[in-house]
Length: 275
Image 1 (cartoon, rainbow, N blue to C red):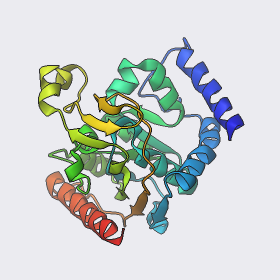
Image 2 (cartoon, one colour; image 1 turned 45 degrees about the vertical axis):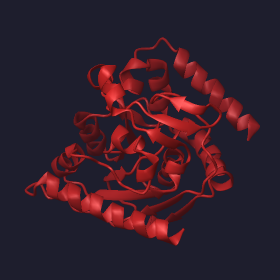
Image 3 (cartoon, rainbow, N blue to C red; image 1 turned 60 degrees about the vertical axis):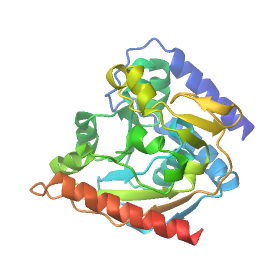
C-alpha cells in the first residue's frame, strides 16, 4: 500500500507541475493506467475504513448511461471514492465524471490530476461528448446544495431546481441510473450551510458556488469554507444502485427530475432504516 501511494503521489505531482497545454473539456486526459493504480487503494480504504457495502450492481448499465448520485461532505466526501471504485471495477465501458469549474479551470494543477482519473468540466457539452464516445458519465446534480446541506438534512437528497442532467440524458437518448449513498454525510458535521456568506463573497458569480459551509471535522475541529480538506470520520458507507430510469426527449425534464429524486429519496430512507 505504501509503495502504491508513493507511486500515485509521484505521478500526481508530475501532472500538477506539468507545463503541457491543458483543456478541462478534453476526453484525452483520462489515464487508464492511473485509474488502475488508484483503484486498489480506493478499494482498500473503502473496505477497511469506510466498511463499504454495495447493493444493486446488476443494475449498472452495459451501454452508455448518465449515472446520477447524491453527494455528501464536500471536497473530501467519502461517497466519491466509494462510487468511483465501484464504477471503475464494474462498468464495461470508460467512465467520465463531471467536476466543478473551480477545480477544472481555476485550480489547474488540481484539474490536471482529476482529469487523469476521468474528470471533465461540468457542462452539458462535455457530458454529451463523453456519452457520444461510448462512455458513461457520473454527475452529482445537487452539487454544493447537496454536498454542503446542514447535518440535520443528512438523510435528504437535495437537487434543488436543477434539471440540466435530465436534458443531457434526453438529448443523448441514454437512461439515468441513480446511485444512492448513505452514511457519507456523517464524515463531517455541517453546522451552517453559509448561503448568505457565499452571496456576500460573490462566490455565486466567480466560482459558481452557492454555499460557504462551516463544519465540525478532523483535524481542524471547525472547518470553514468549501475547499478545506479534512479527514473523513470512519462511518460505514452504503451504496445502492437503482434500476435505470428512462428520459424520453418529449417529456418534461422537471417531471423526470422529480421521479429520479423521489426514487433516490425512497431508497435512502430505506437504507437509513436498515442501519
